[in-house]
Image (cartoon, rainbow, N blue to C red; front, side):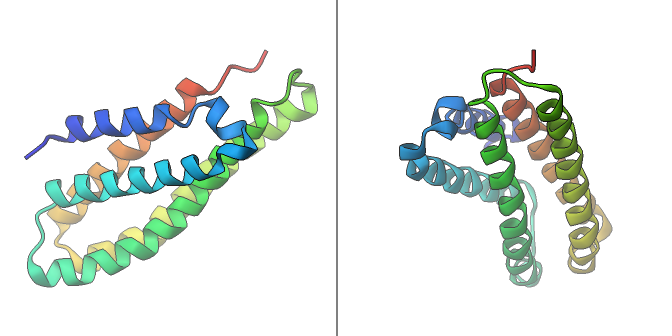
Length: 157
């Protein structure tokens, strides 16, 4: 069984493909979608390998995860598109910088709101220890994804 760090390395590689050139180029939208699908596939495998579920838990968990995942992916696609658009701006003026701050805070709030909505549903399916473990896995992936997006996003000057 691969470790969480091993899967995070795979995620890093995939996320590195989402650099500004890929995100900004209109003709490269298809590779971006494929890469996001691969990212989600790796995410599912990471969860499956590190969250032992009984057959009954799995029967309830994975459909809920799918629902949650679709909403999370919508947020992520919006974020990636925003950062891709931002890389096309040569000079960041005050209004663009303010909009960037608002975007970051809005994304973070929507992410927390999504977790607050779905985590109680996951807790209803899993025992407390498994729910806490699932939250740990999600947090590690989220923090790593954030770090990778930050790594490929140029600093505002």
